[in-house]
Amino acid sequence: MDSRKKKEPHLHTETFLTDTIALTLLSTGGILSFVGFIIGMFFQTSFLLNLPNLLMALLCLSMLIFMRSDLKTPLKIVLFTVGYFYFPFIFLTNNGLHGSAPFYFLMVFLYIAFFFRGKALVLHLSTTLLFYIFLITLTYFHPRLITPYPDELSQFIDMLIGFVSVAVVSTIITSTSYREYQLERDLVTETAEKLHEKNALLKQMLITDHLTEVYSRQFFLERGEEMFAESGKECALLMIDIDHFKQVNDTFGHSAGDEILKRIADQIRSQVSDEGIVSRYGGEEFTVLLPDVSLEAGQRMAERIRSAVEQLKYLYLEKCTVSIGVSSSAEAETMMDLIEVADTRLYQAKNRGRNQVVS
Image (cartoon, rainbow, N blue to C red; front, side):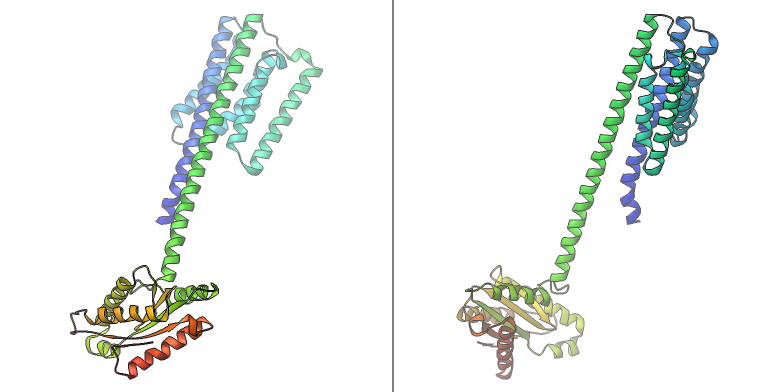
């Protein structure tokens, strides 16, 4: 479902652009052919020489009326009919290279360049180019194949119509191509923005504990290593463990345990605020990493957290307490040393009766 929705804007854009160019070709071909027929009648051109103009006008009109649902097929039919039969006829009956046919030859190349891609583009351009070269070369050696204009006025009108037609078609194709570029660029930009949002969300999921919504152990370890790499900055670490948490799970179930974990995590985060990094170290253990904080300041923060947690009220039990061990980077050479010292002091707090801070 999602992948189909993502493709729909591009498919809609491609269909719109193809239809625009197809309608331009059919309408231009129909109008030019009809105008050519009128001019031929006005200048009393023989009916046989004027008949192709009428047939081409009827062909373009019928394509517009009966094949509107899918314009790719009529586009190819009209393009090849015009390129290989009608425009060569115009070339031979309208003074060759000195008439309007070169304008129309250019128009054919513009349509081919827009409608085809890859090998098909190279094939059709090469074939059409070779055909026109052969036609021009043939008339060079056999100039009698060329029918001149009956007078200068008819030549002027035909040249003017050819010039205006190519100018209009070139403008439409250029503006349509630029619009296609804009739509594709907007689509790429939108896709890049969505990808960036998803990457940011994925990154947030990787560094956040899904239950308590504090930072993950991985993020805590990475940030701690960064702090140790910043020389001259002291930091404090609090290792926090919920007292008798296994009994809570055994007595009230894991749902109650999860609720207590979330409540205590929220309380720790509210006490620390933006001063440090709160993470879930594992199970019922939390860590608080305090940048630019001494051991004494870390101990005061730990006492605030211990007192705040003790005052919490729960649905399943009267109260729940935590034991906290505090260490400082001033007494550790590595991040693992900092953790080990805090962890040792945490167990000292446990052994001394729990619900206390050791630093």
